[in-house]
Length: 87
Image (cartoon, rainbow, N blue to C red; front, side, top):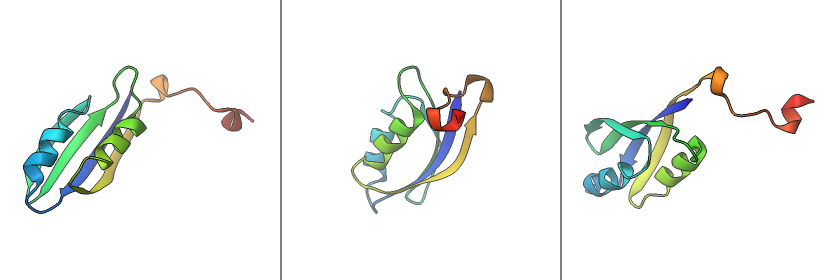
């Protein structure tokens, strides 16, 4: 299981549009909305990696920035090691 939290800053006046797009991303939960910012958590979902969801959020129109605030990876369910890590 992977979970991460982001602080998203919207272009001024565009928070509602950004919020509407963000909630369409699988695994997203919005916790705080304040002064043009959203604080969200994203939990990975089957078939979609957290990195893909992060990129999708960063590419939403009118997102000025998406800053990673927290990341958690459950070692029991961690992704498999790459060949470089095994050497």
